[in-house]
Image (cartoon, rainbow, N blue to C red; front, side, top):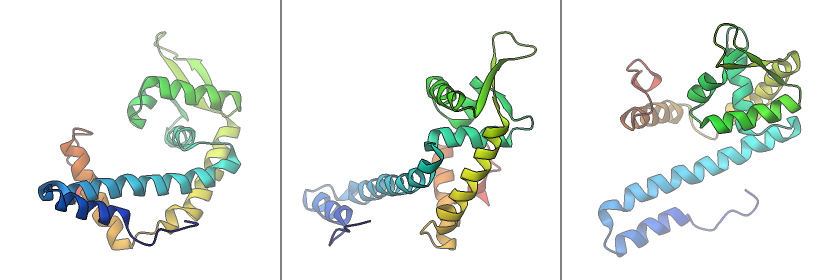
Length: 175
């Protein structure tokens, strides 16, 4: 950050919560607020790395998802489900990626109601280049200690399962 604050405003907020008689919710409020602020910091880092590629994180996620698909193509409704976003968000991302020549839409070969979204050669190259940049500039320099990363994976995985995000009992949060 260019101009860090002299004190932690979330710790100040927690103390204010406690002084206001909300001690039983002060720590969870501080934890949730810290998670939200951390998400903002990480997203800004990611968006900064992706900007030279002409990608947003949402568009990058779709390219990355398609790059892991066996054929490089997925039904749009499946992409929406796997990315856990509204179908309109996937449609918007596909529109932009298609205009950039990174994906194409095509009819499903056996289900006329389904549209496939498929990586182009340029899209596959872009996904690889953007992933290399993110790995180099963000993921390998996350700012978290290695032990913290493992704890965070477990903590957030357990939270997401309890929140109904997924049902799999053999996920990373149980390792």
